[in-house]
Image (cartoon, rainbow, N blue to C red; front, top):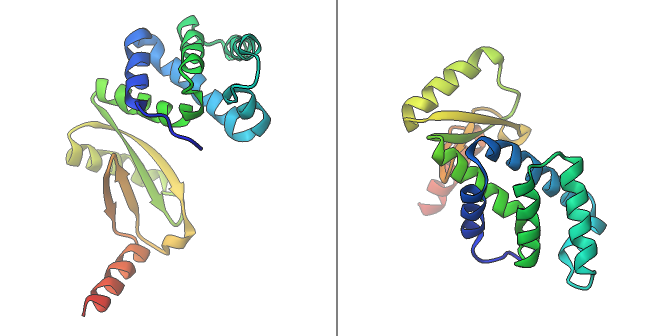
Length: 179
């Protein structure tokens, strides 16, 4: 997939032009389009390929916006990305929009990866601990990865905390290789 330069620029444009009360809903609609792009290769080709009629593509984007009950500004934003030939980078743009939105709200997103689902009784304490570390409210996404064997891996932005057995074994292996 070709990545368009200026993903942050497109994300800022969205955040600046959509009402703050509509940003979360707008992100949901954009994520729905991303899912559709990922699930349906023909749809992705249709909205990204310049060989298709511009009016037809815009009509399809308008139809999707109406079906997802997207605010008018979200529909216009999709058309804007199409005109800028940046629609193919929508997944990266949505990630950047999410990051900006969390920044505005003074929140952070943590991705917690563990070999088994995290028990409900530990979720609140984990959230409190991460808030103490970051100084921000935390939204947590849980991912199960049995290959970790044990422990947990937490990513907040570009920072990684890895206490997984797999991660610790990797560090041990690196030390043996170094000598």
